[in-house]
Length: 485
Image (cartoon, rainbow, N blue to C red):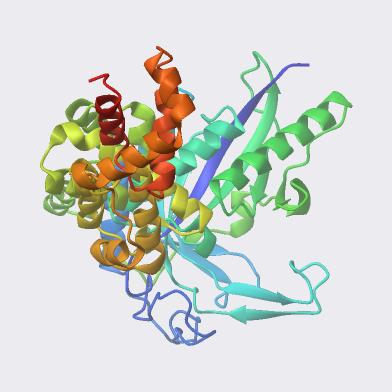
């Protein structure tokens, strides 16, 4: 039977606040275990939480960017479940009355644009972190330790409509959303650090059927590639079970990125299992129109608009622009370099270096763009040295990689390595004459009309000059010396 895949995503984004959702504890990542905690975030009796205004502001900014309706009145609720990383035995979240509803996010998958509905955007607090001893997961572990540092960290949950129709759609949606969150400055979207996490609900239904099939929730996807791989595995499993006449059980499943398979963790809870009720210690959230308008004005240019502007203003191919706007920092680097270069028509060259050589270095050395010790001014300096003939394209790449690796200045790398192109006619003339003298056979062939030999002679000039000769000038001097100019 042919099936249609239906996917909805619940994305949790850790908000870029300095303090937690309901207390003043730090949210800094990497602190020693159980050092960023207090009686409020660990649920001690008699404590009273106070809502973090900055967290509300960042969530409102996200809702506006996602074209949502900001609800005039929203409330926090207690979501009850019992797990060692939840010290209060309930999580403060939003349920029946969320912060924002009914938005959308436009994505582009293999050249096709799709509009994915956003059901809701709401605020909640994070749970702690379990560290299992003796096994990667709680099953099989000798013991589990609890780090409550993350407890109470402001989280924003973005729930999509079940509009995604393939694992590829889901991966692109998550990447597009992560990019948007980075651009508007609400989340750093570092999946490897857990600041962006994604749970996926997947079901299959016969093609043409309107009713949804039974869904399963997939967890433990810590990269965009992992999202696609996990959902491909779950999609395949659903089809196999259904084709064999079996039934899908609603449950939460764990993705193993080594075996690229999913395994059952626990039965999937329903909303009534959590016994939601309004949080009595927190006031409702009722943002004023003036505050919403102020936040709206602060958002700035969004990735989709930047993409169109780069294509129109800088005449750059769409695929190249996708790389440039992958992160806000890359786009800023590019525009600053274009500004310093002073020639808009040179923008495609700058884009090629960023998306080509710099991206290649980052990938090969497993470094993020933001971690590179390199500035737009240094890139422009290298490009100008190519323009004036000081460096060849090959030399420029060597200089670039050395600068990226060592953090040294461009001029210092050139001085230490001797990487300069010979563009002085008198200096190059001596090498040309030596090549002519040492290759009489090829010179005779060239004079007899075999012009392809010129490539060989230029190559000999490059070899003798240890790659430093200006190829165009070498070609010109050879032709002149052999009477062809």
